[in-house]
Length: 174
Ligand SMILES: [Zn+2]
Image: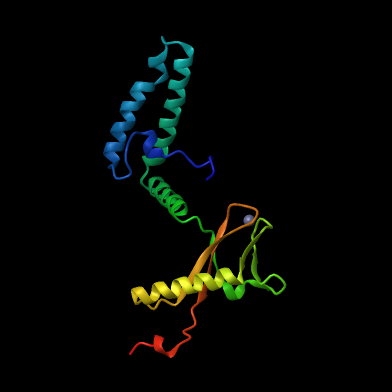
């Protein structure tokens, strides 16, 4: 994961996302009192410097969280970021939309970095059997199945999906 991820603004305030605006304000005021540059006048310069950094951080976090609309916007982007971490998949691709490489028995799809996602026929077959087995155990008849395939160049991945063909008539439900 990239290091450039934004600092958690709630963590900066020592607060939690479920805190009310009033609670956030209280946290902010406490921190500002603690780190305000005026209060650090007498201490050594490195301590004053880190205090100032903290003060600016707290102030920047508060500027976003104090407004209902910008807080909401931040909450949404925070949520999206969390989702991305749980499921680092860039997009879905249908197996039918991938290019078939006859020579290598390989399905390929171009990544936007110029690299390639590729999955062999055997891998597809394996995953197909795996999901089929699972389906029989769970007695579900979901139509979509797939596997996550990583780009050979960058860190993106796609979820390659296909529709399971019901081969045997015994799979039919009454
Ligand atoms: Zn890529």
